[in-house]
Length: 154
Image 1 (cartoon, rainbow, N blue to C red):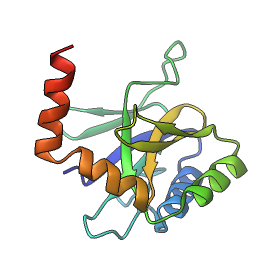
Image 2: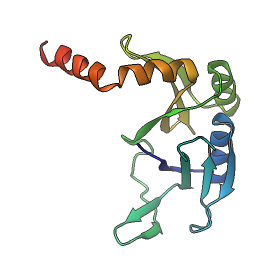
Image 3: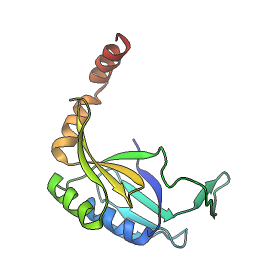
Image 4: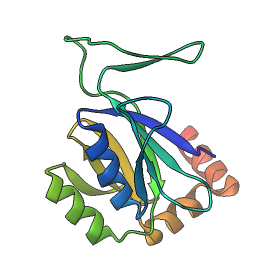
């Protein structure tokens, strides 16, 4: 189980506040990394989303540094799926208000997610309760084994 993730944003405080709203939680300053913030979800798993300033690098040995890579892409391969109690309509409304790309995506009938592109560069997938139930049913060990068997026999 993943309990927290970290992402980078151009406006870390603001992004943490919007993510907290999407999760019906609260944003606070990250006490150990100035300029960084945490969106607390207050769910039973202790889920948190840390938001660092764009250009932050985590390095071995616990070092956190801020460096600028002008040629680096603003997009990356990281994303996370997060269960929330917020409704599909609320998620769309909040993301649209922020000018962030948002869409509900069907994952080949297995489950659906709501893709929210934070600052139009970082993908987070949100699962309101009905979406989460279908995702959890899909991710049960027996269901995953059937899925693996199906795709490896193609």
